[in-house]
Length: 148
Image 1 (cartoon, rainbow, N blue to C red):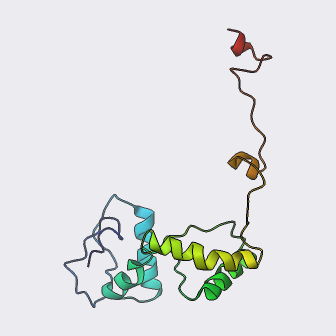
Image 2 (image 1 turned 135 degrees about the horizontal axis):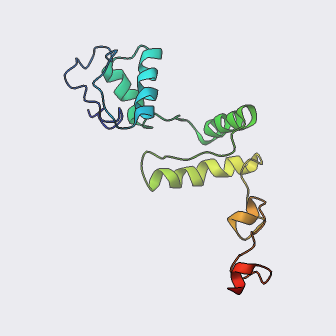
Image 3 (image 1 turned 180 degrees about the horizontal axis):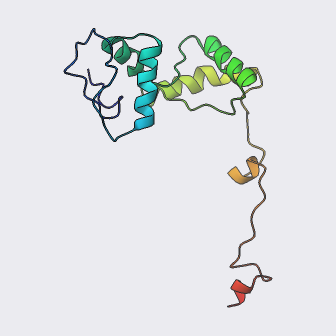
């Protein structure tokens, strides 16, 4: 088991695997916020080092949703409607197969519920975000920089 990368460089190999995560793990300068997040999870749920590893191994400490396409859509819909989520990053455990499964099975369910668009209105990301195109200072004839 390699918790080192998940705990931002902290080596816990000197501690018993089925023992608690130490209160003061070895110091590191790498990924302080990630380390704090994972250690807080271990403390909040009173996890052993082994349990912590098993908990974060699949989703690398991120929110993990598992179930049928309808169950996954239920969870995403609930999070979207009640917590103001404006999108989700899909981190499939296996690529590209896991992402393909999500697209093939979950996306149609989200579309059926009106939660996933079927096409984009604009031709560019800027247009789809409702942003106007900024003036180009090099091609705008009214710009002094263009005349120089």
